[in-house]
Image (cartoon, rainbow, N blue to C red; front, top):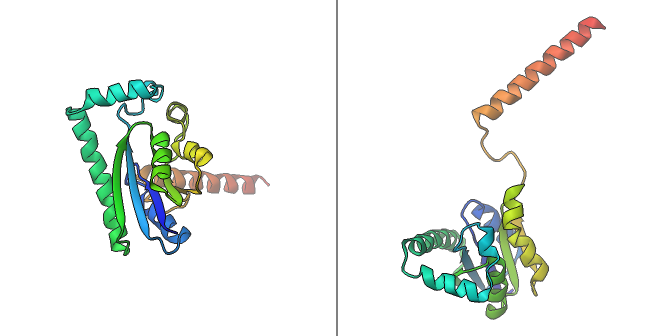
Amino acid sequence: MNRVLIAVDNTKISKTVITTLINSTYNVKEVILLHVERLGGMSLMFDMLGQAELATFKESLKDTDHKRSLDKKAEVIIDHYKKELNKLGYSRITTIIKSGHPAEEILKFADDAGADLILLGYVSLSGLGRLLSGSIASDVQKQAKVPVIIAKKPATCEEQYSWKDAYAAVTLTTLLVIAMFLIGTVL
């Protein structure tokens, strides 16, 4: 496999993305890390902008504190992934920062760069968040001309429990024991 495009959005799921890269690919010659800045945040209005409006919006944000903040955040994210990949022996790593609609930018860049595979991290949204932002991973997977792997965080007990989780588990267990005792005495 020559080129793998990894679209990165945040560092929360970086372990999953990197593990998926290692487990799903072999002999990768170049890794391209792409971060797409959402200039308008998670706004539904931003998603409805056409190309002309988006170009005007990008132009109006040049040299603003908001754009500098987005650029700084993008650099932190890209640097995080690059360091992790360097530790694993990946030497040909290209980093790219784009701005616009994430799914569109990922697909366009994958075509332009000649990517053989697109790897995306996926953080599950539910309810209103999913309705407003849609699923970038789903859009890319449906429209890509190359294979797409979506790295999802496994649903296991790898995360630490909070005290609320522990309290709920102990309370539920205690109630079940009491209920079983009462049923046993009645019968």
